[in-house]
Image (cartoon, rainbow, N blue to C red; front, side, top):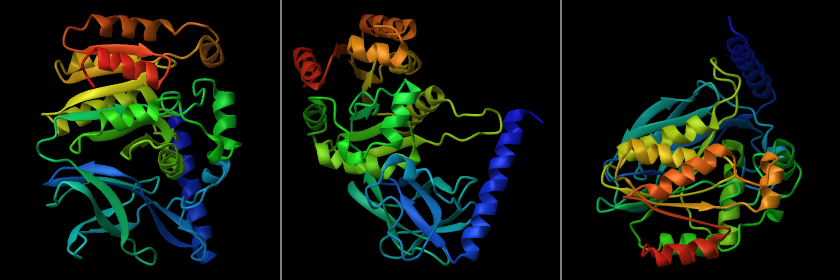
Length: 343
């Protein structure tokens, strides 16, 4: 048995032990839903079941310091009902080893902001899971990174990212200047889809939703990940997560072209360039926020983007069917996009 397998099995045993302890103390299953997406014939349901004091507020419903969001009691293997708003049973699924539900179910819904209802035996009943149902005529989708693209975090530098996430109040987090206005313009057309694709943990989803509302960013589906061991690796690959989800979105929406926004502090330019190569003609725009020299030093120890990021941007700039722009903030990017005729 490899060390990664041993770690995953140890985590599973710990989760089971904590779940039993919480159940004996009278905790009940509570449902946390995440903004998701779908079409008029199917929807992706994204949620998590946690064990919590029945008298406590719903998990994630109140602002907390980041470290407190990490202490959760997952409830793996429990049954979850998915129903239409009229009460019709759509599907019956079980949570995975981390208490998550991530499933595509067939259902007929009108385009727009819709919901399905989730219930768990002995716990929450009829919790609304928000779904953006794309219009069949949708031809553009905006996909954005979060950390250091719309939210100032210095994410690549572990200790500073940890301080920002664990110790600071979520109400003190600030947006990258000009980004909220840029995103509102890009999604002004009613049938434009909005996706936030990040390496961030699902534990931060509720705080991110409140942040988006507070700074005026448009609502959108959250596509986050879970940091824990997989059985083949100690930690999930954030880069692989982003690459996989982009390909998934392209396959789910074959008539849509993508506007991709990220930053040059990590691997976004490389990921977007690889996606543009893998799905020719599907990328309309790539917009990269350029970190300042100080931010780059804090992020990677060098005042310049890493070689992979620089190479990715250079190749995107040469791509014939893709508009590529870069700038230090949302105002500069907006001016570049207007000049390119995108807005």
